[in-house]
Structures are given as structure tokens and as C-alpha cells.
Image (tube, rainbow, N blue to C red; front, top):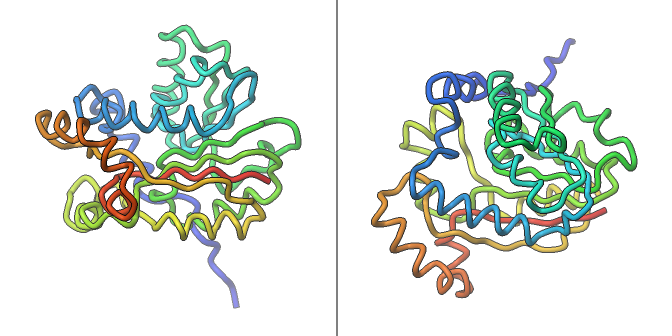
Length: 247
């Protein structure tokens, strides 16, 4: 009896490449106010999650590189962005050149399920996985593949406890086309623990949805600090979870 190996990519890889061909970038890295506010809050949380000064970083699922090129401002020694979407990687390389950070930021086409060359001891101090797991065919397997990594892992994901997000995943054309499915933060922590990593912190943040009207984005940003400080309320209302794990 033969067994079909599990898939390592989904159709959304092709869809993300089409986004770059059509728009020059991913929809959620564009200049819309809600995207700018949400991304700024998320980037700040990642900057606070690990001391990136002098570090070598692997940015898994880097996409069009919009977030990867931010790492030089945090003092990294080197960052490598890896993504299976070849058109997006081309756009990422062009972005790094245009911003003058290509000496510290490089990009490669690759797969999160085939990381042996990247997990060589001492090559990277930190792995960042920003908004990637909810696009994968088997996110638990992807994290299990990090078992050999000796360092810190920062995972940023949509908050699977948010009921509005669950409705969007079911009915939003964008979410359906990009095959998005969010997970409870506790489940992601379980996957990391199963991979032999120790969860250092887990919290939820950001109240601004990526594609909401400008007026709504401004209003939510004002009340965001209050909501983030309220137990239970933040667990349901906030849009992202950030988890830091270490070996």
C-alpha cells in the first residue's frame, strides 16, 4: 500500500503571487490606514519580543518582504527571508534594494517544511513566523520541524478566539481565496511545546482590523490600549496573538 505524502504548499501560494503581479505587493502590506495602524502595532510587539541587536534572524514566510526590511532598524546583523511564493520573493529583493538594506537583508525561495540547511546550529539566533501558520496545510507539522533549532522563536498569528475573525474566514472572499484559518493561541503553544520548545510568553494585541474603514480604524486605535489591558475582553476582541518560545 502506497501513502501519498502530505502537501507542503496550498493553492494560496499561487494566489499570493497573483496579488504581487496585480498590485505590486500583498493587500495587507499596502498603504491603507487600517493596514498601516495594524502593522505598526504588530511590528512593535515583535520588536519588544526579542533583543534583535546583533542577531541573525530567519523570517519564515516573509512574503513580499514588507516586514523583513524592518529588521535592520532593530539592529540585526543579518536577516534571511524565506517564502515559497517566487514572485513575492522577487518583489522582496527589489524592496530591499530600493530601501538600501540589501547588505543585511536577503531573500530565498524555500519551504517551511524543508529547513535542514537553515537549522544548522549557530546560523540563526531567532526565527520569526509572522502571519504564516494560518496559511499552511499542516501548521503543527511546520512547528514540529523546528525541534532541532537552538534559539528563540517568535510566532505572530491571527487570534483564533476572535469570533469576528471566524466569520470573516467563513464568508470573506479574501479570506476564502487565501485559505485562511486561525488557531487558538493555546493550541499554538501546545504545538511549540510538542516541538521541544518552552513557551516564554503568550498574549493578544491589536484592535484594528486590516481592511476596516479609516474612521473605524482611528476610533479603535484610541481605545486599543484600554482593551488590551482588560483580561477576557482582550482575549476575544484583539486580532492577533504573539507567542515567544525558546529552546
